[in-house]
Length: 415
Picture 1 (cartoon, helix red, strand yellow):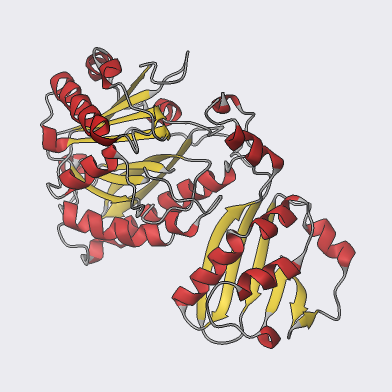
Picture 2: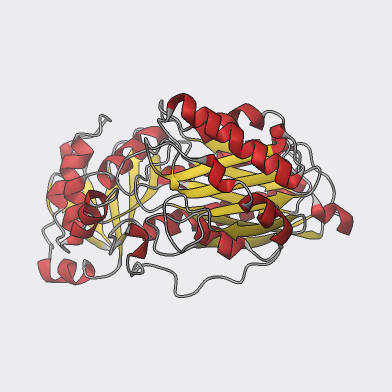
């Protein structure tokens, strides 16, 4: 099975120590959805009054759990989150709808949470019905076992082709009181979030109202999860949710309702840091990845143009295979800029690999040194910089190389 893949060479050397978040508890179990002898379902329980925000896939073929979450997000409250791996419950018609309803019913009986405060997510194979009866008994047991220190185990339970659990944490002060933000993510293939196979769940003990939480999340995701790509494919199931338990209020933390409140400055920076860390980990675990690639575009006609050009480069199979082959083939980058559909002039273009300029003014750089560039391409992090030479628009995106292993993993995915 794909989840037995060897650890990505780009994986973090060790997991961070994840502090408990006041007001949230986790538990994991084996429901046998698809995988044998491994956890495949996780339950997060949140204290009464927990506020919630979320962003979801822009796919026109969303999964049943995405529809379920969207419909309940307006309520702004959460008490329980159930996530399974092994089956995405996407493209499953009325069966999929019945499956989420049954899952929520089982979760409600297990936790006492109301229908409108239960959120669901599924990841795995598309098009196969999800047998929600597998959660019967399992969720009731998990509700009893849930503990504050279970976030790493929860991150493991939601893995599919991931080779390691992705977690990140940061602290910030709101009006002098320390709060914590901790999150998890899963994803390794079908990654071109547009929100945002990508699931991510972030928790904080800060007492922040749902509308402010939503505004911060929607803004932060544009600079993190929406700036990564592994293979240009947007999943049916992309879900990123942020839960605020308000547990820090007991320690004197001020309750904040307005996103423009100046006291949120440090919190916003910490949230950006956690989301960018998780997004980078998803790229570092890209299926078969051996190189982490940062693409910086500057001098574009505008910020949107810069992002489109950067994504054109990041999603180019020819650029990504050249990086995999440690070949500084800047011609591939010229081609990707040219096809992006944004303003560009051949004779104003300049391209760098790391600090080495390889092309300028529509020609190969006169000082070009193949040996120097070849040495740089052997590193596991490659920075590609492109100056369009037209304006002030800039963007940074992250991707990985495209290797034979990516083809093998996805060729064998359902077998």
